[in-house]
Image 1 (cartoon, one colour):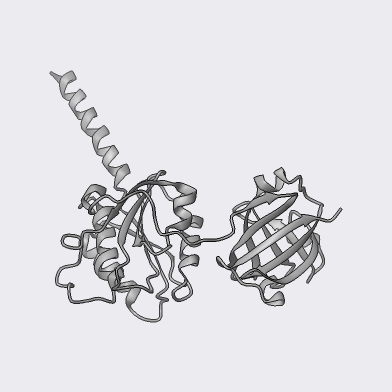
Image 2: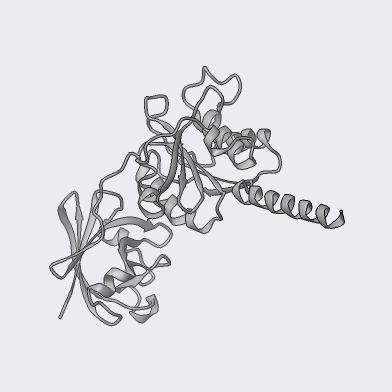
Amino acid sequence: MKKHLRTIFMLLFVGFGSVACAQNKILVFQSDFGLKDGAVSAMKGVAMGVCTDLKLFDLTHEIPAYNIWEAAYRLVQTVPYYPAGTVFVSVVDPGVGTERKSVVLKTKTGQFIVTPDNGTLTLIAEELGIAGLRQIDEAINRRSNSGQSYTFHGRDVYAYTGARLASGRITFEQVGAALPLAVVSIPYQKAVLENGRLKGNIAILDIQYGNVWTNISQQLLKKAGIKYGDALQLSVFHNGKQVYEGDMPFLETFGAVATGKPLAYLNSLMQLSFALNQGSFADAFKIGSGQEWSVTISQNR
């Protein structure tokens, strides 16, 4: 009898452990709201109204207004470091109140992203893959008595649905109807090696320091035969028009060149980047980031 009870207890323990992993009560917020008013706090208030046991975190609320591309990048920069079962609520929604779909994407690594399907999921879909995609059923997954509000879906739909999912109040299947495994995608220059030259996108700026980050990986650099100490020629294009051309060494760290001098290096994501030692490369050469910015790189031999 004792052995039988112990077996039942172990089965229950394993079962509860599986649920805890699937619904880990971690909820992470991203938006372009800033922190000057109560918008972010209102979303968190809605989440806590669903479940006070939730663990709330901020990815960022400093996405430039309406910048869907940067929202997409900050997600793919951050989501892989959170455990399976984590729910992200990303609200950069210039089309709020229009016909764009409100969705929850489940990645192949087990995280969930609650967001408008407006391009925000471009890079997540490519890098982590889509295990499931569901349209939010607002008849059941919307804050009570908010049906007449058309301009704050971050609070009324996304934070509420995200909190219900993260807390285990609903399952992924209860979010709403299943959709085909495809999302609205922002076109941009993929990282490629063509005829001995690397091409890529300026994915983002390291805002604090003005460094320029591309989507060209360490693996692609190796494929091109580029190694530390090589001299590189960089050309930068905005909407196809060349706006910068210059030479610089590919080095391990900023201090390997004199103050104010340019260099190429690998950033924390192991992608090719460009900087001025103790200066802003982006400001000095008026370079931005996003889908309309691209680069070509070749070796100076």
